[in-house]
Structures are given as structure tokens and as C-alpha cells.
Image 1 (cartoon, rainbow, N blue to C red):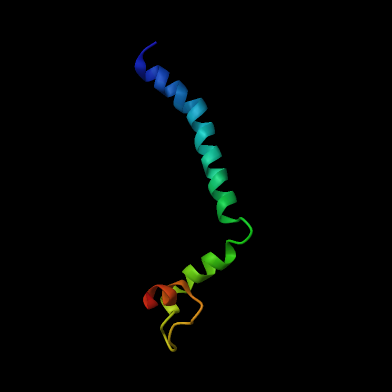
Image 2: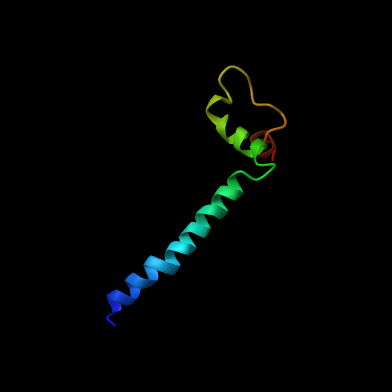
Length: 66
């Protein structure tokens, strides 16, 4: 077999399964319990300093004190 055929066969079978498994792992990681607070804080970054100073219990306020 030529090199192209071997690589094509590998990509069509095992690499497809590997990438599908990676995709499922990422989806499980994103929707894991306890991740909501992390993503909520990240989503609020553009609105953090609009009308009020930063809240005391956020990560950014703790980093700015050091």
C-alpha cells in the first residue's frame, strides 16, 4: 500500500473515533456540575465596570489587591 492509502485509512477510522471522543470530552467538561459560576463570571466581564465598581468577591478584585 502506498503511504497515502495508509494515512487515508487511518484518518477514516481511528482518527475519526479519536476526534469524536475528544469532542464528547469537551462537551462533558463544559456542562459539568459547578461550571456555571465560572462561565457566568466570564460572561459578565464586558459589563463589570459599567455603573458600579468591581464587587469584592470576584477574582479580579483579589488579584488587584496583591
